[in-house]
Length: 250
Image (cartoon, rainbow, N blue to C red):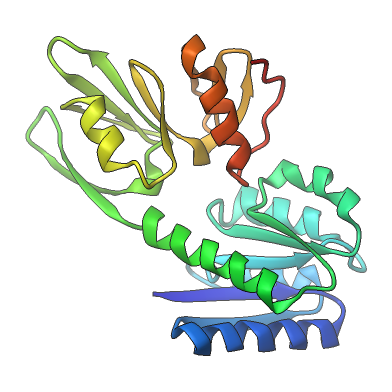
C-alpha cells in the first residue's frame, strides 16, 4: 500500500525537514510513501483541480499561512474535493485545536515535531488504512452480491430480530440482508464499530456529534443509543480523532 502525503507550509526549511522524517520512516518500516510539498494553500488546491482522482490520503497542513489559513483550505478540500482525506494540522499554537474540529482532523501536531511523535502518528495512519480499506461482501435480499469498503458503512441496523433482518446504512444508500448484529460486532471488532443498542452497530468514524442519547451521523441520520451503552459510546467517541462530541451527558 502506498501513502501519498502532501505537506503545505510556508516555511520551506520546516517542510524539507518533515519530508526527511517521512522518508526515514518509509525506509525504516519498508512502507511506500510519496511526499509533495506546497508553500501555500492555492498551490495545493490547484493540485486537486488538475487531478482526476483524489491525489492524497494524508494532508499535513500548517494552520497559519499567508492568504488562506490551513483550516480554510481543509474545509474546501473536505467539502468539495475529498471528504475522506486525513487532515493533520500543524501549528505552534495549540489553542487552534478547537477551531480545527470543524473539519474533523485526524490529528494535531505542535511544532517542533520530533521523530518519535511522527512515527507514532504514521503507525496509526498506516493501521487505519489497512483496516478501513478492507472489503466485505454482503448478499442482499435480492441475491445480489455487494462488495463494499468497511469504511463506507455508517451503521448496521437490526430491523427485525425474529427474521434476522439487517440493513447496512451507507452515506446515500442501504443494503437489506439477513444476519445478526452479534456476528458483525465480532467481525468488525477491530474496525471502530460499537454496539450502541440492541438494534444498531455504529461506525464511530462517521459520528458528527452526540447529544444526550442521540448519535447524529455525518449524513444527518440519527441513531438512538441505549442508556447502558451511553458511557461506552461517549468514551469511544472521545478516542476517535474524527469527531467532536457535543453535549454528552453520562
